[in-house]
Length: 168
Image (tube, rainbow, N blue to C red):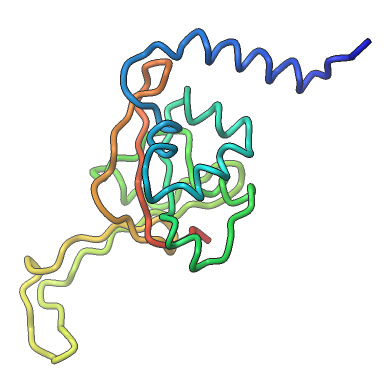
């Protein structure tokens, strides 16, 4: 006779809940990462972590995902990296410079770089700031592209940012 552990029972319960709510239209965060052609290595890591996998399908979340190229440059990711890449609330660009947000004791510092009125280029010529875009960072990683707004299986907003480096 097999005994079911508490963690096994929790996984079975989560799977049952996910199955019942999977009819919601559109992609959730998990599906968007799985279906993105340049996020396959991060998707593989999510698949190895049941709780994160389930969280990305159901909860309001902002996640910062590295491209495959960024992970290749870094070497590889371990499951502990996942916990420094997402937070359990929505952080839009308009409320982005709110200093630091933490999740599970992993600090995630969000900063905005706004060019000075007259930044200098390498040739020491003054350029008006309108020629340089505002840049957004999560720790050391720069956000590339626009944020992707998604909807979880339970109907709450989720936000995906793609970043150029592994967050340290």
